[in-house]
Length: 397
Length: 231
Ligand SMILES: Nc1ncnc2c1ncn2[C@@H]1O[C@H](COP(=O)(O)OP(=O)(O)O)[C@@H](O)[C@H]1O
Ligand SMILES: [Mg+2]
Image (cartoon, each protein chain N blue to C red):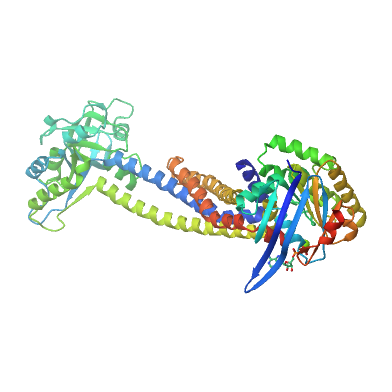
């Protein structure tokens, strides 16, 4: 009997192609919106999250603007920061531009970064040679680590390890080569601001500080042990820095990518909820459309219903048939919506550049929503059909 | 076992239209034996269709007892009545009442669907009954591809499909010309000869005379005179 009802509903939908399609349109739009929304938002969020994680999960960046009395962070401030429970390491970052030569050609305005051994312990950036070590953290240490672009520029095809560079008039020995990666925040930002393929040279931060002529550090990178406690850790960092800068406003700023990510997640979930609401309205409108079509269909087929009853159809069978019809109609719309939604997501993924993953959740939601709407809005018309008096129905012939 | 398949006693049907009562059937008492061919004759508005609806279990009487196949049916609910219609009644309507989007075979299969038969059996029975009414060449024709007489034959095949206790025909020749009407009546006779019980409703005395027995209805009352003639 179920099979017959199914076949009959398909026949009726096929018999009224245009009307059925227009009726399904609301469901199609609603389900398409839901599918595309969930798939695209999930895809983008995953992409951004994984980028962020690559960039700086568990990292807190401190930028000190300083005050008139105290221009930056001192060694003792760093010492206090490193004693915070959840802080695994404090890495200072001194940035300056200097002329560099290999004894022959001279290149102006090369970005030189001063870093400590802590940085190399927390970031896997060495491709060849060795990283900067604790013994290099001496104002007179003259070693450097360079990136592949710098190796090309200053050493051509030769092995740069052990090579000499004159940086700001001082002789340095190359001890390591950096990986060509965009995994760390600085090079990522450099990439965003400048063209790719920048020369990058890292020297011990104490040597760098000496060359700047200032004793203060303006930028730090802190590494957390447990990213889950980032808020508490941030508070403790603020306490230390507030004390260091005597509670002056705007004397420093903190950037934690984890909390940034939290904020972003809040925004996307708010957006998703809002758009899901709009999709739900589309589905509601679609449901009303289906109800309308089914009511028209019941009226049109009054005689047929009467005849079927005369031929022995029980009221429950008539009800099943009309319910089946509205569910099939709605599900058909839902299936088209699922296809369209995934198609749109696929195209958008390709255009924006995130990985398209079909969301099983979204497909399930689309499927059950459309089936549910078919039942919900088909119920009243089906009930009306089942209660038609066969005599009245046949009399209208 | 008695051969009486229809036994109605003091059936009344009263319609309520607002305040007014309309007494359409008045103390109708009627018995019909297995294998009879009965015509119910009466002018328009006399209550023929109302009586047929009650006989066919589409409607229930206001009062009175009705036994179909020795089973009291006047107190049954809608679902049970549907089951009785499916098993015992084969309707034939004046305007055929075929579903236009189904071919002859599918139209005949309809009552078999509600009788709960498998698709395979339905097809076989529909084909046999359509052959019985002489439409073996028209199995896949749609109603609009058939003449009026052929359409009524499809309707008769449909009524026969479930092998019902009674064939119930309301003005079966009303929409047909005289010639085709006579052919349909001839088919009724053949079916009656094969043992089918037929109740035919008509307002036309010349058609009623083709039946084995005439029951006259006038203003909701069965006429005793015709019953006397028969007895
Ligand atoms: N549902 C109804 N409500 C009120 N009156 C009805 C209804 N059905 C039939 N009648 C009345 O009953 C009478 C007999 O109708 P019907 O049985 O159709 O007669 P016939 O078939 O002999 O022409 C008519 O006067 C008609 O108006
Ligand atoms: Mg009538």
